[in-house]
Length: 116
Image 1: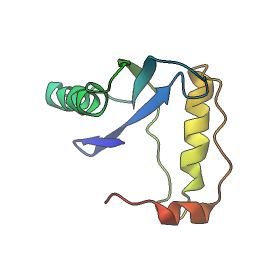
Image 2: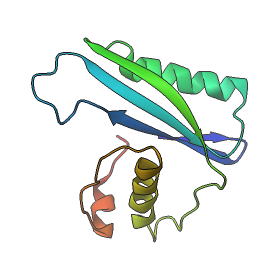
Image 3: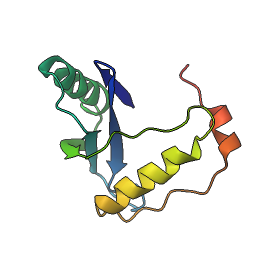
């Protein structure tokens, strides 16, 4: 998810800690707000509201919102370098010490994304 605040972008990374575990009744999800600037109170409330709407009503699910401050804004050549997104997300996973490897995909795989 991308959140724009006065022409700056912040991103949400949602990590389901239990997705690879079998027979787990309760889900524990970490939501990381990744930003290189201070969000306005209104924008931060929007992030909280979005997270609550997405995850707050899930049965046997709890989540925690973390803020990850980065030095530089993530910039890539949209729509010509979509693989930069995969590389950036993998770097964030490493930085957060999340032992997940993203699946392999190609530039053309981004053609199938939809916001419908």
